[in-house]
Length: 170
Image (cartoon, rainbow, N blue to C red):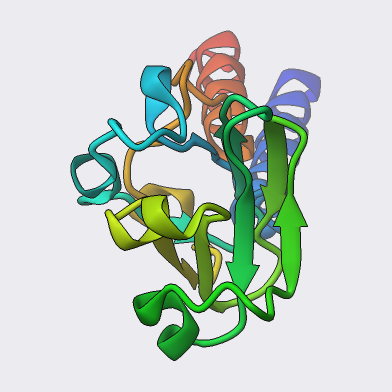
């Protein structure tokens, strides 16, 4: 009888922990996008290829790497300024050579070269920031420079349940 009560208690603990794991709040992995990958932010970088298929989400970070003595980056307010390369009224300017930009809210952000000729030649990037994905299972593969597997709360819970059930002989 004591053995049966122990198994019942363990099963209840497993069910409660499993329920908490499934119903708990998920931590959404933030992605660090290095613009242009190894080539960085430069007139010779094919930003269209780099940009194609990439998804930007709230919480992600964009990294711009460029020679600060030759280049800068401006964030513009409107698509009209962006497409016409009107650099007269930027909302932000980046000049360090390695700049991290946090994507804190949904919407389109417009980044362009601080050099009007480079802008006119295509050194610019419109970033459409999407909402966070609540369920990691629906998210696209990470686009981080070092895409390592994530050990999520759900996978931890599943592992725990499997170990508990095998321990109990079920």
